Image (cartoon, rainbow, N blue to C red; front, side, top):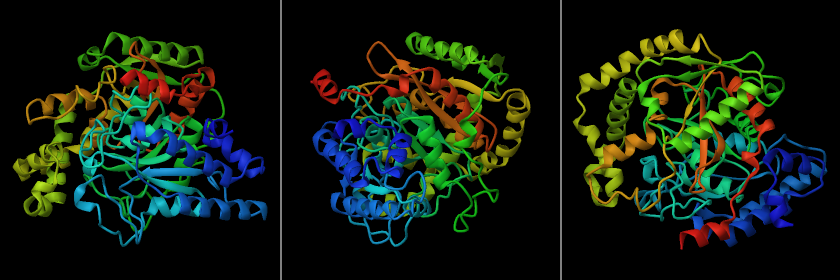
Length: 478
């Protein structure tokens, strides 16, 4: 029965909990059993909290039985990236520096998730200080892909992607500074949403780069992502960057046809350098969207490589500022890969950083006028190559780091500079048995439209219903 429960989508479990066909305690025990049996192979959790989770589940069952149902997340077992602070608890941020650092505040998104009645299973693995797109972590161990544990999960929300794909949790929150939600979602075969900058509060969340960071959900289906986004979206007075407008009904927006919608496909040369196996699945997903009534048109994007360069300047400068004191006083406690990604920011001239910030608004306006005013969404890769192995992407020296990072983040990083929403949607598997995903980009605050397009696609396909055989994955990597 445990496996049957864990195989449910969040939305399916939510309905069963509301109707009392299953209890939150039963669902939580099923997740805890799955974690105990399988997480040693994928290393998605940094900490598991069985006693607290079962206590929360029992309270949820009592409230639901008494008719005090709080909404779709009530009683649902979730787990989140270990960078969302909880007052009185340790949030490691994936680093040795924070192994014993107790938080004094609780992240706004965790407060909202808690108020919605969700159960907290534990904290998930991540790249150190969210600095790395592969999922490597020398302090807490690398995260392993549930489809084949010899391969990376993507990062930095590595544990979030792996735990959701392995059916250890029904959903998770992650963060995205240059692809850190979309990459693990794509590599692990789940749905991941990078919201518009300012849609979700970052109060009480470890900063990686304050003008690029966003918080968003990873889940098994588009509908599940919509439910999680609904719980966390909206203004938070403690985060002045959050938008004042009330968010729409994301689940309600899923209904209806996408007939007549226009999907743009980039023609820029950078998009020609995609592995043939990956491209075949991207093309197939476009054919499915056309069969659903969408219209596909070519679009020439403002040069993504130029925007990528500006993103790097902002990322490096702000990360170095955040870590300046610790880098100088506790340098030896950082891993080589984290130092490589942070230390370079000390060499970015202030004039270049300020120019990058100054150009942001006009470049977004240009992108909107040339692309987003013509289409409902842009369809493009998340990752243009098959998911690499852990060994092949291991950072053993400073050599080759920029090339590796660019290859993995080529289609995701510059999106954060523009602040646009990006949705990663599974659409197949390459010959090595690892997932492929496409990415939908849209206008700022067009999450409801992107979710609707992707939901229609999932109603017509079954890639999101497939789940890894963890025993087979371990065997393949041996």
